Length: 148
Image (tube, rainbow, N blue to C red):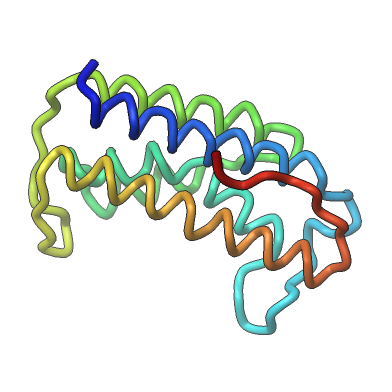
């Protein structure tokens, strides 16, 4: 594993671990809450986080809009979120170790393998922050180191 792969594996791993910790804090009565009007619910953000590493890399390798709609249509229940996040993380790690071929997305974006791996990492941290903000707005007392 190269230095950049080791670094990416470590940093994305921290993002996954801390996302897992945040998801485990969520109380059942808060899943449907929408702390910011017009934005996703707590549950919708958590589901997005649980699948996004895999989703981004499926898109990177040529998944069509229809294929992604089918991917996103598979329900993820609250009690499945941590396992689904781990599955997505494993998918990401498998791609990190492989020299996969990228294709132009169905909306016209082209990037390298490294670019897509970085995009997925940034995407994870972006929505982890969104979930953290939601939980703070709902009054959760979060004591969690988000970075190493």
